Length: 71
Image (cartoon, one colour):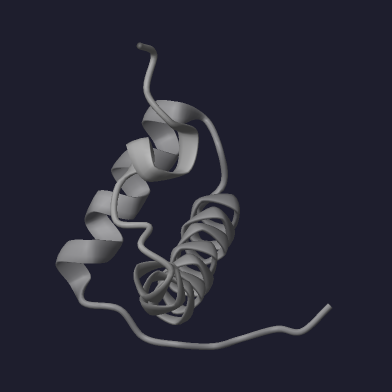
C-alpha cells in the first residue's frame, strides 16, 4: 500500500472531521472512498467520450435505439 501526504484547506478538514465523527468511520476511509468514486467516474467519462461518437456513427442516439420500443 502507498502512503500519500497532501494538504487540504482547514474548512474541508473540519467538514471531514464532522462527517467522520457523525458516520463513525475514519477520515482515511472517507478519503479512500471519495478517491475511488472520483476515479470510477473519470474512467466512465473517458469510456463514454470514446464510445458515444462510435454509437452515433451507427445511428444509435438514445436508449430506445439500443433497447427498442415496447410497441
